[in-house]
Image (cartoon, rainbow over all chains, first blue to last red; front, side, top):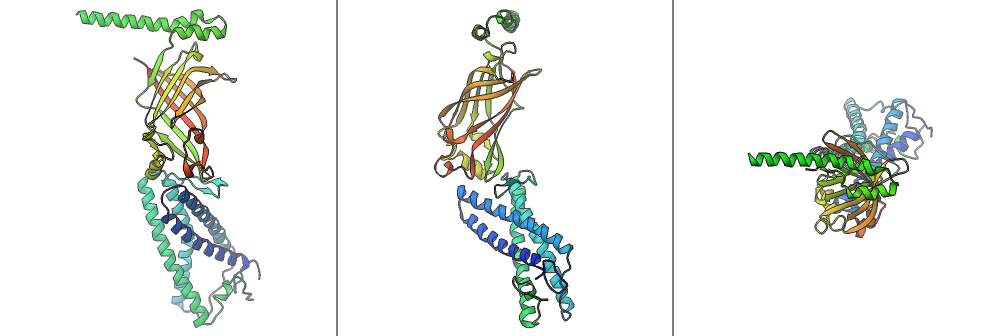
Length: 184
Length: 210
C-alpha cells in the first residue's frame, strides 16, 4: 500500500486521516453527550476540556487532510458512475470537508465567547477567536448543534453511497478506503 | 456673612494644615532611616480614596490548562502615602465578593457558592497594610494581610505609585494560592483542572481624601 494516493486508490496517509477523524468524531459525540448530562461543576469542566482538545485535534488533522488532498491525486469514481451520483458525491465530500473545519471552529468560538479559553491537552493555549459575550455564545452553540445534525445527515448519505457502490454496483469504491485493503 | 467667613477661615486652616503636612516630613527626614519611619508616622501621610472610575482588579487562573480571566467590579481602596516618606504609607482594600465577574453567569454562581468563595458567609475580602517596604530593586510593596473567606495570611503587594493631577495611580501584580484561603472545598480542592495559583492585577485611581 503506497503512502500517496493514486488515481485508482487511496494511499495510507489518506486512509489513516479518514478513519482517525471518523473515530474522533464519534468520540466527540459520546463526550458531548456525557458533558450535557453532567451538572455544572468540576467533572463537566474536565469532560469539556477533553471535548475541546479532541476538537482541536480534528481541526489540525482536517488542515493536514485538505493539504494532502490538494497535493495528491484523487482516486476517480468508476466509469459507470452516473453524473447525478458524481454531483452528489462531490457535494457531500465538499460538505464533509467544510464540516470538519466548521465544527471545531464554532466550538472554539463558543469557548472564547464564554471566556473559557481552549487548551490543547494542557500543552498549549489557543488564542480567543471572539470577545466574550452571552449572545455570541448562544449563536455559536446553536450553530454547533445545527452543524452536527448536518454532519450526521451528510455522513449517512456518504455511508449509503459507499454501501451502494459496494453491494449494488459491486465496485472498489468502498474497499479502496478500507484500512487494510490493498488495491493496485 | 459669618458663615461665609467661617468657611473661608476653615479652608485657609485646612490649606495651611495640608501644606505643613506636606512639608514637615522633609524637615526631620535626615536622621537614621529607621527613625524617620517612626517619627513621620506621627505626622500622617496624605490620604487618598478610590476615584469613582478608572480602577480594576483582575485575576487570572488556570482552568483545564488555559489561563482564564475574571474580575471584581466593586471594591474600595484607601491609601495613605507621602512621596517623601513612602514606607510610612498604608493601604486598605475591601472587595465585594458578589461583584465577581468571569463573563459567564454559571461560573460566577459556582464561584460564589459555598465550596468556593462562600459569598453569603464571607461577603468581603480585605487587604490591610499598615506600612510599605522598599524592595531590593527600589520599588515599593505593601506589607500587610489578606483576609479572604475568613482566612488571613501575610501578603506583600508590589505597588507602583504615580502621582496624578487629582491624586495617585496605584498599580501592581501579585500571586496568591487560593487553597491557602480555603477557596476550593470538596471537589474544588483538586488543582489539576483549576490551578491553585491565582494571579492578581490591580490598578487603582485615587483622589485626595476630603
